[in-house]
Length: 456
Image 1 (tube, rainbow, N blue to C red):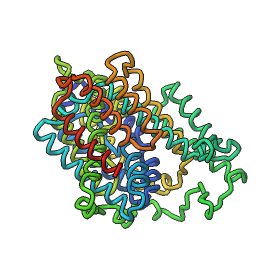
Image 2 (image 1 turned 90 degrees about the vertical axis):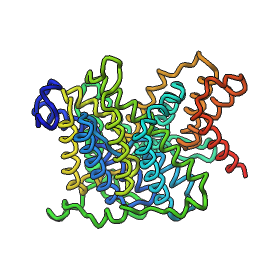
Image 3 (image 1 turned 45 degrees about the vertical axis):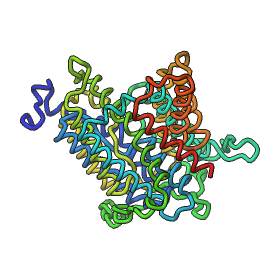
Image 4 (image 1 turned 180 degrees about the vertical axis):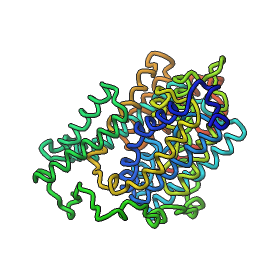
């Protein structure tokens, strides 16, 4: 372990690293419950998505452990999975029979592009050219979007012909228990309980089982109300069903590219853009928490860390899940003393062990995972505190447009597109061409073509 991870050099030991790795897993294991439900809504096999999520997280985190030697874990990213399912599959490509296959193809291309950009150290340049206000505005908008999805999944927010949205029926067990779940997670976060979000999901689910046993929650399969009690008949049910993985792995559709090149390019760019600064921001934030930055405030071996992330995205696309990215929840393991890749190795092993728990995760309903979406949305929305509303109007309006367009048009891509277009147009109108990085001109042209295609 000492030779592999340089434990003494980093001021840590095996016990500390293992405990840190377990802590990180508990903090991010909620993705195993959330991701199958979200991608399942897009038409994918939920058990296959579960296996793809667990395996891609394990593989990507192992690469981070041995290649970059950082205590950073990776898995399918929140926000990116929402964009995959609700914006692309159920929105932009809703009428296409192979919507989720096209989305997986876009993620494959995203990962390949990231690998190329990482090889030429161009990824950091791309991040630096995006105005800070836009970055924080986009993160805030994604938080609102994820929160809205959580409210919908629980039935807290429902459709209204008069006002578009309305409050759901509080008396139903799904709505009531989801609201209780948010409070439960909030209480555990207040007391700094490890794995608060995961425990919140499990506790809400437990309340649901009690509601079913007492007759409050009534199973009605025809109405989409399923039993909350895991259908386990024996030990064999816990063995991974790799046939289900075959329903998602390598299911690409390349035919769409030739037919709709511009639209496909904008889909890739939206994935690229969100993952781009999200990954770098996460890596810097986690490293800063563990005092791993050098005297210049830079992250040593950042190229290897970014390459691990890029390869993880390709692996995830091949297995059948949305973009794999570095998790900010890794900071919980760093707070426990994790400093090397041994922390990541431990987390990866936990994800591998989790593939035997599908009967548990598969029975968790959407109203139990909704509180997790709402709370994660809260964490992302807190970036609004960093948005400057009294600076350059291009920065202010660009960030604001990005924030409001995501939840109100139900699309992360729309928020990014209109936010950047607003920023660019104001800069051009005021003649501040020196403020515009060459890369932003490419982005501007791409989004203008996308806008024109929507008008035709």
